[in-house]
Image (cartoon, rainbow, N blue to C red; front, side, top):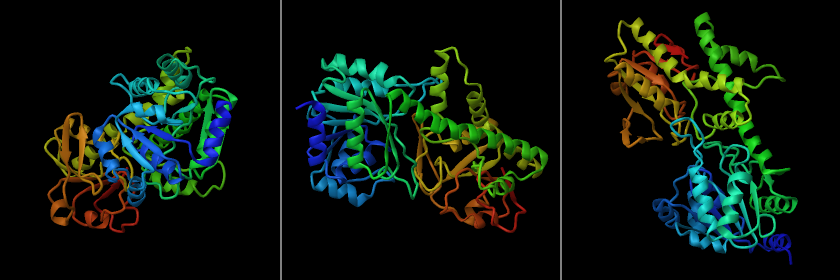
Length: 439
């Protein structure tokens, strides 16, 4: 029996063994979904702490239901390990590791490379390997394929299948989770595409859309997030202009939203956060230079979004000036360091950039975030306030709202007589706006 038919048979009778390399925001929910659909799943991670937590049934990802994880671990359907030798027992391996930028704002694919090398040592015939980490077009075929072939001695397309299926994770989204979000699959060869798509269809409830190659799937993911980056850059620039013209950008957007076609609302803010939107355009612009092409529109939006934390602090300084106070020495309370509302994820959070900009001016900052009691910046840990009361708020010269958490009492904050700079328009329903200013 051919590899293709062997794998199809295993998918249909649910004897396919599944593995996930990287048990973070992408990998752990995917591993849970695989196990929930009746496939024995092994999670691989180099961080022993994550391995131990999974094996103890202790959840650390917001999009995973605690009871699901506990039940799957207890039943033996899901386990975790830092021993990559168990890769030899896997029929399907998804690589879900970080792809950050280095200090020069260039792609850091060291995690992808090291994961591929670890997998290659134990890769066996008849295995599907799928990269899910966001990266530049060509990574799967030009980087992963040689590593896997050289490390294993196997031939892609003949002995194992290789593809790319971009992760689509929106932390905190109450409607779309890993299981019901449509999936895109691009693989090397028609057989690989068919079988990998079939495997995803067996573990996910959303539609699986196939494309002709991994490069198409890689570019598709970059397009998704670059689209958002550009439109957020546009609305941030409009916000800056509207402020100078004395026009409320938020009211402008609400009016534009009434058009039933040709317009999708995006909103301004103190910058971009998360693991994709602030980073992915850099991957594309970096790769484009290899072809002598400059992504001028993309780079312009990146410049606008990158300067928003600095612009935000500049606006805050003007608010303090009107109250006859300087930034230098002022006490500023930052509300929210998570990169979006009602989650505990602070990766690339613009709020942290805003805090850094405040410190450059000599301002003294504290923060309150009910979801992020502590955050790490480099080697240093920063601890937030444990409560938010009128007595606490009145200790500050300025309050700046950088994350729109729905669990914060903004009406109380606005009633304390302290200037409030609302960067997320969460105070739009508050009637007494004497102390409020909106981005």
